[in-house]
Structure formats: structure tokens, C-alpha cells
Image 1 (tube, rainbow, N blue to C red):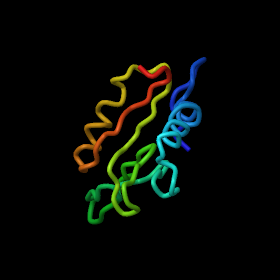
Image 2: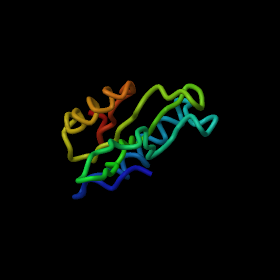
Image 3: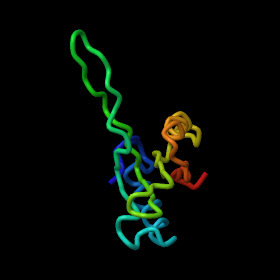
Image 4: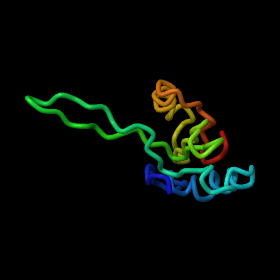
Length: 113
């Protein structure tokens, strides 16, 4: 399930996923077989940073949806945002994903902006 970002009277990120994105992906044929859609999927292990004499791993990058052509071949990311956010709210996130060689399939806003 997508994250719980957002709030207020409109749909939050989780609602956007449940009401708009998941049904649209399934209708488009992405749900069969089930491994074609991975929800809340980490696609990096997280950067290793030096801390004093040791190191720690930062949190990995996680997509709301990772779409796969083959089970071991991801081809796209779908990111959800809360309804009250502007379409550009996920732009930096999309740029970050592109650095990892993952195509940006699209962003679905609450009202399909």
C-alpha cells in the first residue's frame, strides 16, 4: 500500500493509490501475473556513509509502484501524491529515480492533473 502522505479533505497518497492507481494498473493488464506490480518496493539498498571510524547505511529509495516486464526486469516507476499537492511536487523524486536508470511511467494526482 502507498504511503500516508497528505491530509485534509482530499485524498491522501494511500487513497490515491487504492482508488485511482491500483485499479488503473490492473485494468491496463499490469496485475497478471502478480509479480508485474510491486507496491512500496525498495529499488536501492541505501547509500553507505562514513560515520566516525565506522559507517551506516541510509534508507533506500522506495517507489510506490515498480512495474516489471519480466520478474527480474523492472521498467517503470509509478509515484502517487496526495490530491492537494501540485503535479510538480514529485519532480525531484522522479529525477532521483532517473539517476538509478528507472524510467518514470507517470505520476497520478488525485484529479488526474
